[in-house]
Length: 63
Image 1 (tube, rainbow, N blue to C red):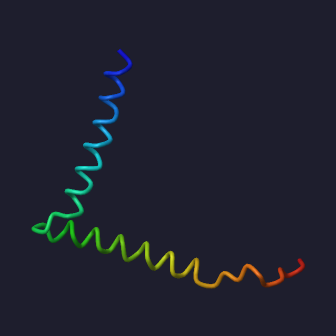
Image 2 (cartoon, rainbow, N blue to C red):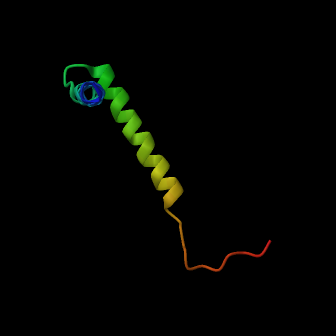
């Protein structure tokens, strides 16, 4: 009984990943490609702005 529920749950995850990959790689849908590319660009900008000036060896200011 538990084996069938595990298979069902894992197939749902596999199906979700498969549909996400299909969504991201559909070459014929301009709106989807624009949405995916803008999302990746925004994530890259966020990472670049928030992780660019870490200096872990600098002394911390006393407040």
